[in-house]
View 1 (cartoon, rainbow, N blue to C red):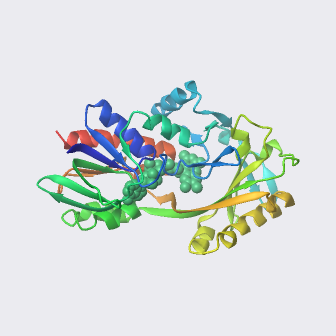
View 2: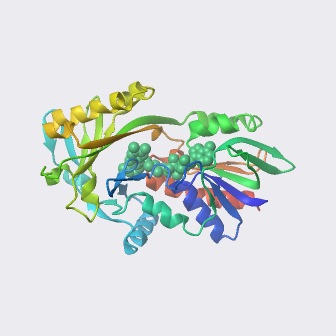
View 3: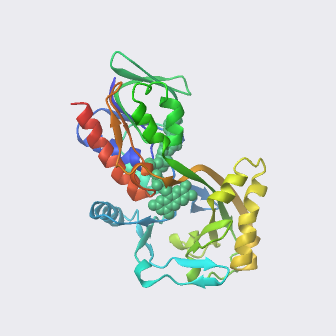
Length: 337
Ligand SMILES: Cc1cc2nc3c(=O)[nH]c(=O)nc-3n(C[C@H](O)[C@H](O)[C@H](O)COP(=O)(O)OP(=O)(O)OC[C@H]3O[C@@H](n4cnc5c(N)ncnc54)[C@H](O)[C@@H]3O)c2cc1C
């Protein structure tokens, strides 16, 4: 039997598992996807890396700053830009002086951070937890591969709306815990990854753009500017607003779900952006936290040790997920004493 099973190999789960391992506990991560990183997601397309989840890393706290510097020393992370331009119907405007702080990116895609964190951890991939129970002071987790796993404690790092249906029954004796999780709200997002003819010139101001008050578009990244191979074709990432994503989340035809984003970027920036040589669509049902809990993690001993972690505990960024993972490890160690 394991000391701790961590559900989810995103930033929170990986950070937590590392801390638990360092504390001498026997820990395994169970992850539904084939890879690691969760919403720090990268797709390998046309010979390059395209980030279709998190676009950049910002640093607020000293602790996270030290972590990012360590990643910089290992060439996993590099400085990307201080300038996020704003795009509205009046055109592009440069950021105000107090908005010009450093943003970081990964030359080999955001998942490089997760791969680095995962390198010495025990991870079971392609295993979605589909039911949870407890017996004789042990958690029993069942995966969609019909594997039964037993553990003394669980750290769940999956988004709260996905956690609730899994744990609602076993947490009936802890109604306030469930109530807290019900208050967490996520917004969906539609993301387009698009590659263009290499003859197009991309202005420097297009590197990172926040769209202001647009009904469809919320963000544009010149993804190629993150990578060492600047000679390859321009690749962009477009992200939708939450209202647009809500409307198109259940649209069966991905082209219909995604094309308005390309058309809108063509209208707002340059007509050629509406006609890429290739493009792919990814839909995130749980993309960005709209309402977080306001605590670094949430734990209970009823019925037996359980900790919830993730960006949604105290924020909406990679940094929030990092802090939550660290706090969850401390909490799990306490619960197991
Ligand atoms: C489109 C988009 C853009 C973003 N942009 C930025 C940005 O620019 N900067 C920034 O800081 N943040 C950004 N974010 C947010 C950032 O990605 C997250 O804050 C962070 O990655 C969350 O990490 P996490 O570990 O809390 O959760 P996740 O990364 O969601 O990890 C949860 C993991 O649990 C797994 N899982 C779920 N259910 C199960 C199950 N039943 N069984 C097993 N495994 C399961 C999932 O596959 C996933 O790997 C963005 C997110 C999206 C989607």
